[in-house]
Image (cartoon, rainbow, N blue to C red; front, side, top):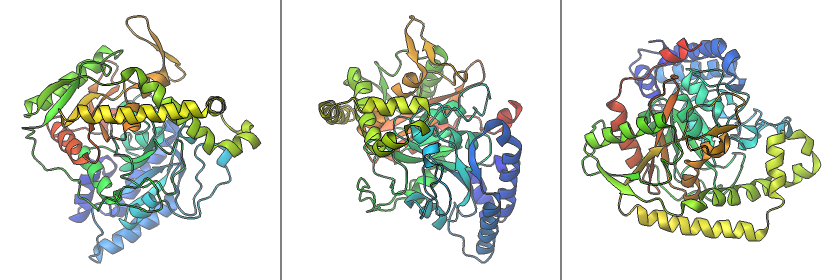
Length: 466
C-alpha cells in the first residue's frame, strides 16, 4: 500500500513507529494530486512548497521526541470557506476573488497546533449555496457530480489527494458529498466545533466537520477540534473530549431507530437495500431495532428553506446590491429570492424549528440513534437537473439530496455518514446515523463497529475508475 492510500489512523501509527516519515507521506499525497487533480479538480489551490516545508518541520519535531499527537505530520485539505492566514478564501466566488485571510480560523489554528500539514484549499459550490460543486468531478466517475457543497474535500479524501479534510454543512454539505464519494462525513452537534473565521451561509444552520476514510479517523479529527471558542457566539461550553471509539464491535443494548416514514420514501431501491442490509448488520452486532415515526415531516423542507434563504440573503445584502453580476446565476437567484421573504416567514420557520426540536427530542427517548439513507440516490450525471421516481414524481436533484440530510441541521443534532456499499453502476451508497445532541460518541461507536465488519476500503477502485 502506498502512503497516500493509508487512512489517517494507520498513517499516524506508521509515523509514530517511524515506519513512515511525514515527508514521505506528504510527497506521496502531492504526487497523487499532480496525477489526479487535472481530472478531478478537487482543489482551488495546492500549496506544495508550504506543505513540504511543514512536513519537514513535523519530521524534525517527531525525531526530536516532540510528537504532538495523531495528526502530527498528516496532510489535509480545508474547504475554501475556512480562513488560513495569508491564503485566499474565495468561497468559490468572483465576489471574494481579492480576499486574503488576515488570520487563522479557529479550526485551522487547532489543526496547525496539532501538527497537521495543510495541502491547500478545496473546491466548494459558490458560498456553499448548492449541493453539486459543479467544478469538481466525482471520484468514482468523472461524468457524475461530486456532491456539495464540500465536494472538493470529499473527492480529495476519496481519491487519495488528502488523508483527511474539513468541510462545512448547512443542509447536508458534508454528508452528501461523503456519501456520493464513498467516504465518512461527520456533521457534529450545532455549536460543538467553532466557526470563527469560516464564511457563513446560514448562521443558525452552519456546521464545520471532518471528512475522512474511516470512522475512527473522523473521531481523531473531532477530538482535535472540539472545544469551546468564545469568538463564536454559538460555540458550546464543552470541555476537550477524546471521541475515539472502543475497538470492540458489541452493540448490545444500543437502540437503533428505523424510520417507518420519510427516510425511505422516494429512495432508489438499491440505496434502500444497501442501507437496510447495514441496519441488519447493526442488529447482528447486538443492537435492538425499534421502528420510529419521524415527526413533522411535511414541514421539514419549508422550515429549512425558511431559515436558510433569508439568513443567506442578509449575509450577502451589501454585495448583492453593489456587485450582483459577480455571483453565479443559480446562487444569485436564491439570494434575490431571499429579499422577497418577510419577517413573518422567517419567524414562522423559527417557531417550526423549535417545535421540531421538541418532537425529535421526544422521539429520541425511545432510541439511542436513527439509521437511514444519507441521500436517496447515488451520484447523478453532471448537468442532470431532476430525478424521476418510480411513481412518476419528478424531484430536483438538489431538493432530493438535501431532503434526508437537512433535518439534522434544523434540529442541530449530530449526523454521521458511513459508506455501506455500491450500486450496480459501482457508485457509493451512504447510511447516516443520527443521534441526540452531544452524543457523537454513540454514533462513532456504532459506525466504527459496523465498519470493522466490512471489507477494508482502499483506493484501488478509484484508481481503476480513471
